[in-house]
Image (tube, rainbow, N blue to C red):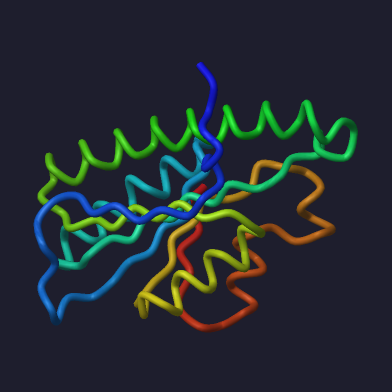
Length: 160
């Protein structure tokens, strides 16, 4: 299966019921990791209890393989990103319909912190939910969660 040329093109899909015009907005970042999936579950629960709409943001970004062999890495990354996007989109649609939560599913390409910050600002998020990083190097460079918290635009819930 080969990914199309638009594997990294930004997309926006809507699932579940239509949001109320006055509803709050919860944004969650998802990348397929265990902590991100727990964050997504927590965000669905928050949105459902608060009658809020949920914006699920999947950020595709280049891996360290791109520096080694750009041509090979590009094909691999496109296929992996397309496959992961398809799986996450299907899961989010299922949760939205089952839990009756209005969801906007955004796929974007770039730096996760920048994309999540821009998405949260654009949708006027009342809260941002992310999974805790499981990478040891983030103690020194700063995790996505830490960098979002430091931006100070909205409350950030970090799910372990």
